[in-house]
Image (cartoon, rainbow, N blue to C red; front, side, top):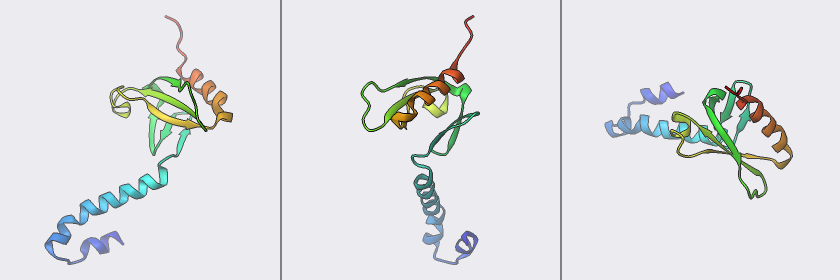
Length: 113
């Protein structure tokens, strides 16, 4: 279907803006499908459609005053965490806080040197 649209012989301005409009449309669909879908896997965190390996997770902390859901802040190094400037936010149901805390402690545990 996309190839048929790309082959469409519209005017030059239509063809000039076809790729950017298609890109924005596909990004909007991706955002809608995976926006608040956060998962914890053995290999790392799957946040908003991106897998962040456990080796890139620096630290985590819980927000002191939770609302309907517990708020977990995760500091990630590199491009994922915008070079550590802003922590990523994960909303966790209150019933799952202990399990998430246990997983993070297990994955981020380091032997004393």
